[in-house]
Every structure is written in C-alpha cells, then in structure tokens.
Image (cartoon, rainbow, N blue to C red; front, side):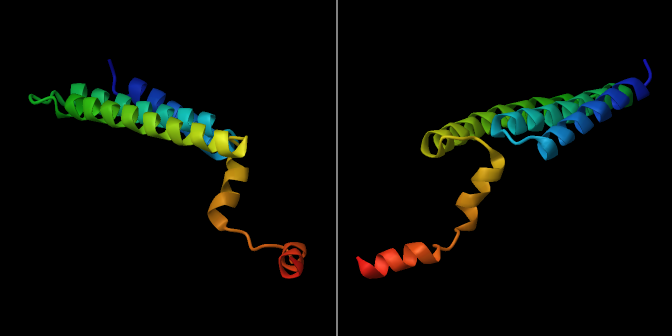
Length: 116
C-alpha cells in the first residue's frame, strides 16, 4: 500500500475537522471536530510508522498516548460544556464569548444603582 492513500485520507479528515471548528456554533460539535482532527493525526502517525518500518514502533506508541490525552480532553471539555449549559441555558460558542470579555454595565444599570 502506498503512503499517499492514508495521507490523503488524513488530510481530508483534518480539513473536515478544521471546518467544523471554524464554522460550528455548538460547543459539542466543536469538540467533535477537534476529535476528528486528532484522529487524522493518529492516522498519519500510524501510516508513517508502518512506512518507515520503525523497530520501536514509536508512531504507534505516540498514537496510544494521543488517544489517552484525547479521552481526557473530551471528558473535561464535555464537563465544562455541561456546566456552562446549566448556568447559561445555551452551548452557543458566540454567546460564551460574552462571559470572557466582561462587558461593562450599561447606563441604565448605573442609574438604577445610584437611585437605590
């Protein structure tokens, strides 16, 4: 088998995941797209390990390490998304940016604080 087949498949998977990260609004779909990109990297690691005929199989060992890290990442990411959904009522990524930016209170809120 040629190296080009898994490399092209991995490139297509990675591009699909990158599109999902950039175009999606739902945080869970963004996490799924990140997992798709990590799987494309794993496919490349295994394909190049087989192609180079490495005696230590370092590519496959690194792939197992990457899978373990991806499992931990998706567990923590899903827990964060669920907590944000409970607090905010949405998992829309655009609305989640409001929490990090710290908007200043409006003039109406300032006047109500002064009169109270």
